[in-house]
Length: 323
Image (cartoon, rainbow, N blue to C red):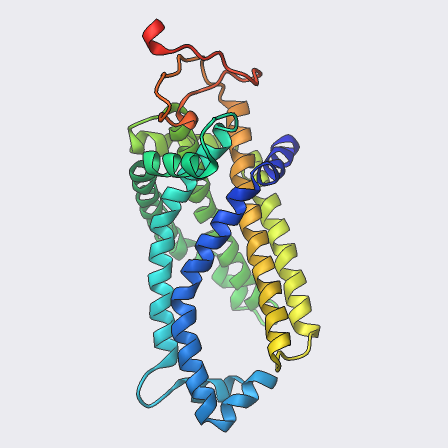
């Protein structure tokens, strides 16, 4: 597990363009809800003296009064934009995951970085999108089936007079849902890695294989993922500590500093996500060796779909027309 974590952390360092590209893409997605929110909030601050107090010190009551405008519901506007961005991010994740795996697998390719990224993204997009639909359906069904029994099993703790029992009850339900959802999301990652490496076509079979792989190696697969999640939590705690102790951003300079820090946190999240994929790819390759295959002579065949024999850093490349 430690070797996979280290290998994962090396991947974004070896491919910094990959992190910058994904950071820019998610930044563009964030502009979709940010621009209408900026226009709406700016107009609201200009006409309401109470709204200006929220900038100095957050007050939930004032915030709710301000956002409940006469002509438009600000929270509804932001929620609708956030849902739209989430849908776009869900669809685009199938493309970006394929691009990430292709860049990882084609480090010695003579083509440019952008060519390799878009080649892998386009080649695997529909297969990865179908895998995401299967994983999403399985996750919703599993959480729905288990939510009731788990809630009833933990309800006895919530009925006691011990004050922390209610918090422990909520924490237990949240952890159970997270572990179950994590199982199917991890299976999605490993299924995509398998499809990219073996160029598999049966998506349901690939997903079942990913689920089986996670269950067979449940401690290590969860351990790798939790390690990167812990790093992400540490990053978010540092940001919250800064937000708690920093003065209110009442000037343009303070706003610019806050924006830079926020984007650094987003960049760190992208870095850790790329590192997680690299760690999972390393672990999957170590546990499921791929047989030596003959590589196609076509330069546009994604390198991630050509299995490499473990332990050999350089695979012998034999054009198919010579075989």
